[in-house]
Length: 383
Ligand SMILES: CC(=O)SCCNC(=O)CCNC(=O)[C@H](O)C(C)(C)COP(=O)(O)OP(=O)(O)OC[C@H]1O[C@@H](n2cnc3c(N)ncnc32)[C@H](O)[C@@H]1OP(=O)(O)O
Ligand SMILES: O=C([O-])CC(=O)C(=O)O
Image (cartoon, rainbow, N blue to C red):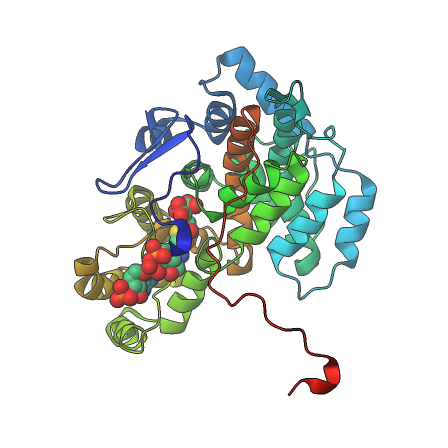
């Protein structure tokens, strides 16, 4: 019962995970093909609207994402005042909350007691998809004392803009393409904890800003999106491929968890991890130096871990190789889970819109195992 393991709580047409074979589809399209051929914008449209866009639809969608980078001045002023020690995702939560109303109220509209119009969710949700890279970029620039990313910077894609906003420099084409692949692979994954959190919030018919706040809070934890940052920290601590075997042995023999390994649904390789390993290898080899060493350390950790964990069906998950790729792309580990959020906000919006269109309040039960009818003792009589 604990952890809702294997429990189906909704029907969806958005994504399908085959955990036994290690395969993933978005709206019926195999994710490996999308990762090779599509842009993040096409995939975002596909997930939210249910079909691949034609040229006109794509242009309109892209324009909406670009326009959404413009955010009110007071959001930037609050960003400047946020305590430095807040986690990046907490800063994103504050900024998303402050954006309430900017892209419409984002509230599902009750038409009848059973029918709900999800259009306001999609409208405001699309705004937040467009705004997310700039919010993350503003947070990074303020932390690093750089000029804030311009909303107008003319780049040809969401991937290129996000990299620019995060690093302050224009990415090369291979960097852009690698990052585009990563964003696509992170865009949705059926019903992980963060998406479920968004759905639970949305099932009360609250607005999409609040549902995304709930999702961001849930993504941050190290058993979910927070693992991305933990993987980089671990690999940097290991430092060299030669130290991997001993490190893995120590972690596992002390009963701890190896970050970036294991998955509730996949009982084999996470297909996203396999793709990202290849992409990380290309970028890390091209960059060389520390990036290449981190890649080689990751290979050694993977080999050492598989020797011990494959028999328990525990394999590298998406966060393991994504972390290596993000490092090779020159992004600081503290922003990794923010990058995850920039991509996954698409899945959150898509699932919330799908669920609320046939909404039913999510309210499970807990099996009570405590005592009943205890006598109330006055304060003086208590031990
Ligand atoms: C994008 C994502 O969110 S992907 C997940 C990112 N999270 C991580 O990488 C954190 C590390 N991984 C984990 O903690 C887990 O694999 C989870 C939480 C992701 C999923 O695990 P669950 O389905 O809840 O499995 P559960 O916690 O029941 O563990 C089952 C067994 O596998 C072991 N196990 C699971 N993951 C790991 C791991 N990473 N390292 C070592 N052992 C592990 C558990 O100790 C347990 O062993 P036991 O049966 O001997 O007691
Ligand atoms: O599905 C999950 O539980 C976690 C995951 O891989 C994701 O959110 O991408």
